Image 1: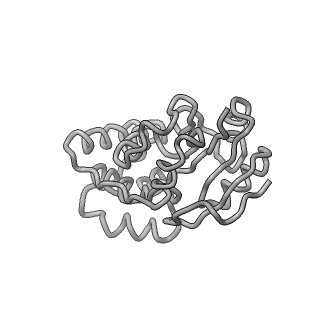
Image 2 (image 1 turned 60 degrees about the vertical axis):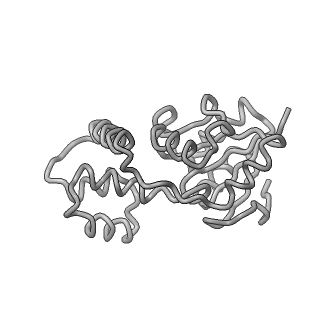
Amino acid sequence: MKKVAVFDIDGTITDMWPIEKSVLLALLGKKFSNAIENIYQSKTKDTYAIFRKLSKFSINRTKFIRYYNQAFSRLERDNSLPKPVRYPITDWIKKNKAKYYFVYATGGQSKEINYVLKSLGLNKVFDFKNSLNKNNYPFSKATGQPFKKIKSKFPDCFVITDSQSDCRGARRAGVPFIIIKPNQAVPSIFLVF
């Protein structure tokens, strides 16, 4: 059986922020563009937290996710979502699809991930059924739980990510990892066991 590469999406394969920001703008209005960007740049990366800081409506996370997904679907239907940036690692994935089996573990939502992977031409490379996202597995990657779940099905796996937090989670799960810089071409830095 092929070795399984478990990919993070945001910061590893692409930058999700332009997509997330476009959905927040659809929810809050274009007049909030600068405020949204300022909050994001101040290290608040969670879209729900950004929404709560700017919205006059107080809603819980579950309702926010429903509204977020509805706005995302409208933007996708209207062809109004920004195209994801193609990081060079996508070429490595395509070149190595016969060598590795690809799944993802991400804190993103399934609709966003499907859109990104389809836009980047990777939707036929990744196994969606065995991948994990915010919708089908709510545990943070930092806990190691998502990696443990994938490892239980695919013992010969490794993680590719740009996140130190993901690396800590992979270490907790006993899964080797490769950390790359965003927009890096080939995962050639180091494999940690």
